Image (cartoon, rainbow, N blue to C red; front, side, top):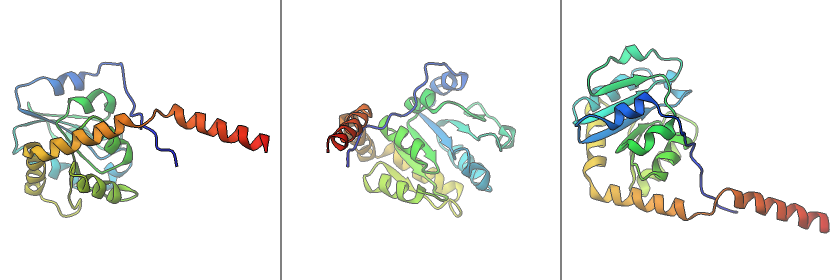
Length: 198
């Protein structure tokens, strides 16, 4: 087994939502996403998340994907809702990510030392959320039952607990220490060459 550093997508393109997230005088920034598949299966989860975060001093960017009308979540000076924003443009600006626990979002967040509140709904999300919680860089909530108060409590704890920030930084350092993905290509080529020589 060769472990390599994940390469979260980056973007050189500026996005207005990224500039908005980085502005304002709120002490914290949150990025909320349920991905592009599970977001339409989440029932009232997005409104519950938004209601919970509205009780905190947090500037919140929510992406809803193509199947949800952004207007359905409203708009306030501290809330912006978009269909899509390249994650590479906003993850580094966030102090916390609230997500479904998809591999791309979770890895991208932790690669930037951003703690995660995970509301798993299927696939590998339960395991991903448990892993983030186990290492101290995340909290798992029940997507079906979590109330706005539960969301607010989890996010407030992630933002205020210094051990969470330390754990998230430690994960980022571990990720940064892994060899680049090109190393896997080198290993595959070496195996292929060895097989031809046999």
